[in-house]
Length: 159
Image 1 (cartoon, rainbow, N blue to C red):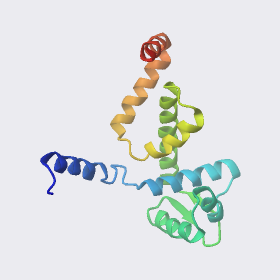
Image 2 (cartoon, rainbow, N blue to C red; image 1 turned 180 degrees about the vertical axis):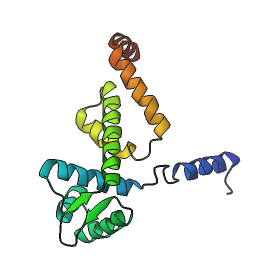
Image 3 (cartoon, rainbow, N blue to C red; image 1 turned 90 degrees about the horizontal axis):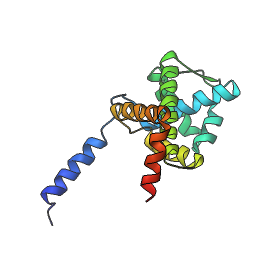
Image 4 (cartoon, one colour; image 1 turned 120 degrees about the vertical axis):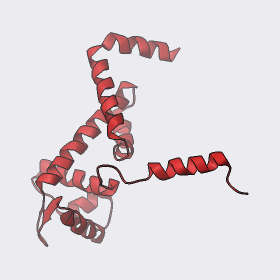
C-alpha cells in the first residue's frame, strides 16, 4: 500500500530531524569529548581504556574515534599516551556541560529524579536545537526568579 500524503509529510519531518546538527558534530563525537573532559577533570588524565570503560565500548572502537577526533582538531593524542583536548575540544566540552546542566535543571523542575534526569538528558542533549535550548534557559531562569508562579502552576497541573 503506498504511503499517504500525511505519511510522506511525516517521512520528510523525520529526514529533517536526522540531519546533522548545525554544530557539525555527531552525538558520538560529543559523547567522547564529554567523557574525555570529565576524565581529565576528575583524574587529571584520560586514557583509551578509561574511555572504553565509561562508554561501554571496546578499546579498538575508541582508537578509531580518537583518530577521528584528532583529525577534527578536537583532541591531541600520542600513540600509547594520554589524551588532551585542544582549545576547540575544550570549548565544545564546556558547551556540552552547560547544555547538559540546563536540561537536567529543566527536567528536575517537573519533579524528575536526579538519576532519571541525567539519563534522559543523555538522549536529549545531542539533538536539541540551539533556539530551543535558549528558550529553555530563559524559562528556567524565569522560574528561578518567580518561584511563586511555578508553585501555583504545579498545584494547578496536579488537579
